[in-house]
Image (cartoon, rainbow, N blue to C red; front, side):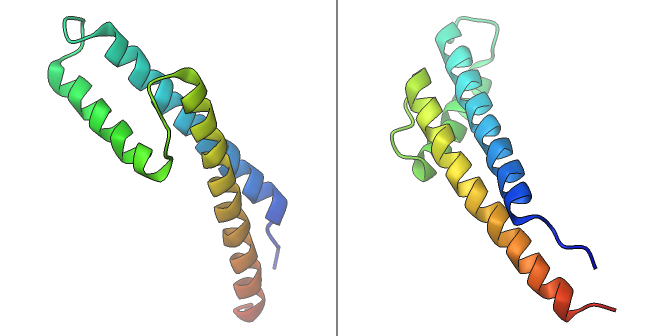
Length: 100
């Protein structure tokens, strides 16, 4: 049975989560800066603000600025790295136990 690279999966999930947080943060700033009179519907803007507020619960200090978004992305990388490491570690243990 093949083992999963602990570091490889940890880096993949960490980087993916970092990029996802950066994308959501920058997109939210773009939408909100266009304002309610822009091309976006008010319901869309409110949904994005609420979604970003929920992310802000997990990553305190995530404000409507690029530096706050980057710092939240770094925290997201750390969380994703730890999660990826634990997933790969657990998979490697169970793949030894349940080998056919």
